[in-house]
Structures are given as structure tokens and as C-alpha cells.
Length: 181
Image (cartoon, rainbow, N blue to C red):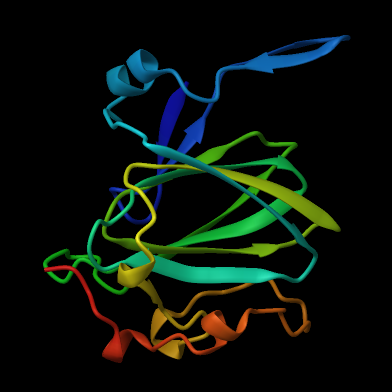
């Protein structure tokens, strides 16, 4: 397993070691010792699974209290996954990083606490899994506007209008977002 850097140093692409042959493949999607040895020493308390169709955009979500670190991956399909730094004291505050995650590349993305997270479904359907370092607290849940020009996210929409929830459509721009100290 390797951690590959992104444009934001605290966000990392996780490239697992995959053992494959004519029968299929095997990989460890989480091994506490291996991840800690690579520099990702975290405890996860909750696993989540979502299924979405092409063009669905979920996010950009975060919790203002009880911030969650997330290890995300795709088991079927493909997404464009995005993390936005909301730590005011960070030199990368307000910057976003996006990567493609798919069943084919088997990559994962580590998003530390203090970031908003979202994804756009690129395949017909996607099964998306994530591990979280803190529990979901709906009273602290916040949504950053996915299309805020200040974020300069290059969503691969190819002219399509994404399908978003009412909550996500009502997200606030970065200039009005509650951020972490």
C-alpha cells in the first residue's frame, strides 16, 4: 500500500497492493498497521455505503463540530471525488482537490478532518464506501455549495446538469461557510 500526495498535502490517494490472477483479485482495503506505517494512523468508528446513478452529485458535506476524517473508495462504477480544505489556519484554506476513483483503479482517497467532501457519479451506477473517524451528527452537518466559483472545481460534467438534493442545492458559498479554526 502506498500513499500518493495530492495538491493539498494532507489529502492522499491510497493505492492498495492488489493481488490478481485469472480468478480475480484480492486486496486489503483497510489494515490498521499498514496504514499507520504509511503515516495514516487513525481510528474509524463508522462505515457508510451509498449507491447513486450517473450525474448525481453529492456534497460538499462537512460537520462543523465532530469533524470526520474519511477514507473513501468505489467498489462498482466511477466517481470524481472532491475534498475542500476548510481549515482557516491552513495555507491551503479554500482550495479543492479532485481525483477519479473507480472499481478499475481500486484507489482510495484519504480526506482528513476539517475538509468538505463530495463526489460526482461518472458511471451508469456507483457503489461508494467510506469509513469515518467520527459519528454522524446531523445538528452539526453543513453543506458547501458545490458550484461556488471561488472553489474553482473542474467538475467533469460534459455539459450535463448534475442531480443534487435540495440540501445540496441550498449549500452556502465559501465566503459564508462556517469553517474550522
